Image (tube, rainbow, N blue to C red; front, side, top):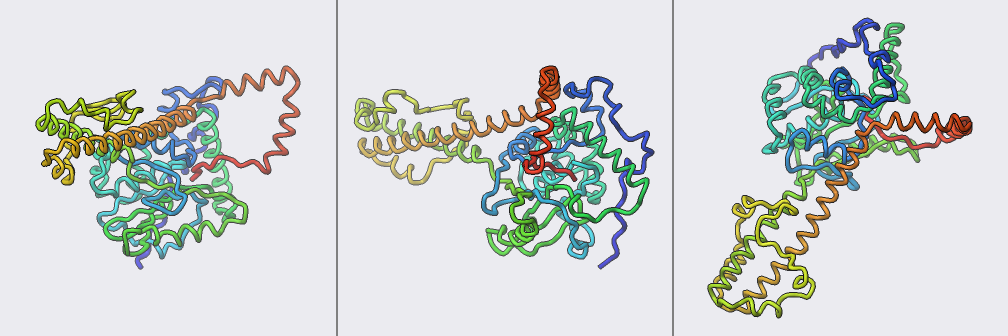
Length: 425
C-alpha cells in the first residue's frame, strides 16, 4: 500500500499563543449570553451533545428534506456512532478517497457533529440537500478529504447553524482548551497515548455504491467494510460497533448510536393525500350512482366521527397537506375496481373504511408533528444561554451563605455524576 503523507497540522496550532482566541475575546461579562455578533466573530466550533433533537433541527436548518435522526435501540439504517475515539490501523483505510465517495476530514476541534452529518447526507443519492449544501457538495466534488474538511471549517452557512448551539461558556471553554493544548505542544512535541484523555467523537457508517463504508473524519481516508450482502447491511456494521462497545468497562455508558432514517411524516402525508383523493373519487362515484346517497351516511358512520365531522376532504395546514400533494396522489388499483360498482351499499362501506383509515393517519401525523415540535423546543432550550441566571442564583445563595455546602456536595457528587455526552474531537 502506498505510503501516506503525514497528517497536516492545523494552521491555528502553529500560531503564536498571542494569536489564539482566549478569555479576553469577550469584553463583556463572561456570564452574559453570547450575541449573534459573538458567534459570527468566533473562529471555533462548539461541542454538541449526542441528542437526536439537535441533529434534526440542524438538518432542517441546513435544508435537508425527508430524513430524521433517531436513537437506535437495535442496530439500524445509516448511522452516526458516538463513541470514545481510538485510532484505527491505517492499513484498514483506503490509500485515497474512492471516486463517488464524498468524505471529509475533520480539521478543527468540535466540528465532528457537522462533519459526520455531511459525510452521510452527501452520500445518499436523490436526497434533497437544499441549495446551500447542494452547491457545497458540487463545489467540493474534486477536493481531497483534507481540503473538504478545511472547506467545512470555513463554510459560514454550516458554521453558523452549528454554532447556534454555542453558549458563552462553551466558547470560552473551547478557547481555553485550545490555548492549553497549544501551550502543551509548545513545551513538548510528544503526544500522550493515554486513552483516558481520548475525546468522544461521531463516526458515520453508510452504504454507498454497493459497499458499506466507515467514514471517520479523524481518519485520513474511508474504510471499506465489505460488499453489501443483503438489504440489512447493518449486520455488517454490527461487529465493528459491538467490538468498540465491548472495550468499555462494565457499567460505563460512553457511547450512543443514532440512525438517519426517512422522515415518517413524508410517507404519512403522502398516505393522507391518497386517502383524501380516494374519498373525493368515491363520493363522486356515489353521487353519480345515487344523488341522495348522503341520507344513508348515519348507517355507516360511527358516533364519534359523526359528532366532530373530523374527516378532511381537501388541503389542511394542520396535517401538512396541500393541493399539490392531493393532485399527485395515485388511486389504488383496488379502489378503482370498487369504483366500477354501482352498488351504493358497497361504495358506502368502502367510504367508511377510508374514513376510519384517515382518522388513524391524522392521529399518527399529530403524534409525529408533536415529536418534531418537541425537537424544536429541546433545541431552543439548548440554545438558550442561562449563564446570567446561574450567576444570579449563585450570587443570591452567596449572600445567604449557602454556597459553601453546595460546593462541598458538588465535589462529592462529581465522581458519580453522569455528564452529557459531547463531541470533543
